[in-house]
Length: 474
Image (cartoon, rainbow, N blue to C red):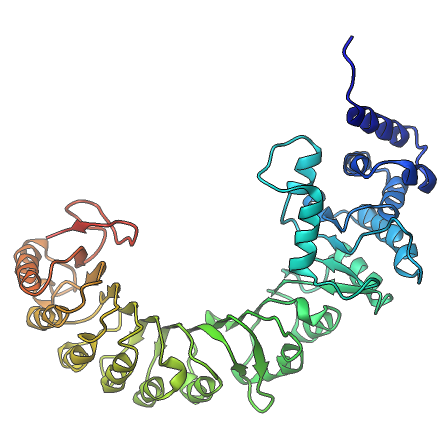
């Protein structure tokens, strides 16, 4: 007859109490806290809602990561848990044993439950895990700080589901005692007015990522300014205006709205992404003026840049330390690219990725860019496909890359001479031209990974990749 370990006996005793419905606050106070996770998992599995309520009231850990246990929202389970919290959050003198500060309804981490169910995980102790979550997600605000309820909002319907609706009402009537915290908020379908009302219930400091995909006018984004001004930890903002029109901003530190404009003042921006904004020339100058410090990535695609827009790109200090500049599917065949050359001059010491792809740049425009491009000494990636350039223009381009010794990945278009009257590549014509271009390039430097024409390469089947140290198709 084998002997059970003391911890195993405690677990069996706890499960027996649960199965025989003998659980009371008194019995829970007598149990070691190591019994609680397994008992709660069992109560959750058996749908013992009264037991769940009592166990929440006596929960001996800082965090209750219920979302990792309740994969699909279940209204009765949520109601039982919130009923258990009701008596606690309203007490001025909290029970001596009560340590719960966070109810986490996000499905983000199963390590807590895995530890107690015997699954080996690369994790620290339950105490350290609970402390880590609390410190990272909700800094302490004193001994009697409000209880924090964490969820991620992903609104795919015009109204809230029954669980979220119940939770919001519960929190609304306990203002000051409970904070609803959402690190990520996404709105795909909820009307703007309802969404703004919902934002009023979320503790603004908790929001780090905000994504709004609703059809509305660019100049109406200022309606969100009062809410954005309170989101002191906002890092990423994504606005989609319908039909693929998008503005995406990523920030290292914080945003602050300019209440006189539909845009934000970005104090520590990281990335600006603009897609299909047809009236951008009315706003680009103001938007760039709101970028208070330099950011590292600028992406603009599927639009038209007029001469005055290009002037904007070259004038504002916020673009002065770019590491990535991506202009794709921008129709430039009639645009003056001298301002773009000025911008390349400014960022020559920092730029690592330059993408000028499917812009229909022609020979005269390309030659305007070459002096500035030759000074981009830190460049590691250069995409130039989808442009209308001749063999001679491409030779000039390659000669101007002689000092760009860090280039590891290069993509160039097939020259105009190798295209048929439908714009398709004639590979028999391209092969000798490509060999000629490679000889021109090797006169000034040794390439690493380079493609001419469409990819993947018809010779070896390879496609562009920055993970390959050395590859050459010639």
